[in-house]
Image (cartoon, rainbow, N blue to C red; front, side):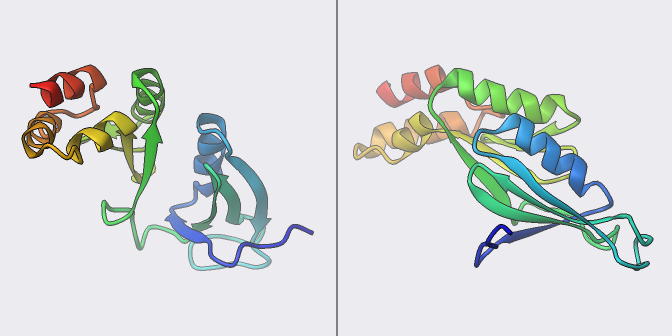
Length: 161
């Protein structure tokens, strides 16, 4: 028996928690589907035997996908923020999410096809917008504000002036 985490992020899905968990496990390192639990009886959005919850891990963070139905949907008030080491890693995650039915947003944000928000954030961006030189930080921030997916080279060029 696996010891449950004391604190788990519960994410609401409309019947497709298992698909989402499988996608995350295939896309991100240190991610996996831990367990799939089926409903012991009928429930408001499903029948006995349907997938009710899915225990999964996203980049080391324990999550529980709840197939709760269509009453609630994800919004930008919750997002996973993924710190990337370089442009290649940024591109890989961004393209996986957007290319699998997701959509681009602004400033390094995108949504997966289940409506969950992701911030694909290069470490270079974080360093640039927190630069001790206020002018460098401002230039980098202003460059970021014009982007969808973050372009590390453009951020570094803006930081340098």
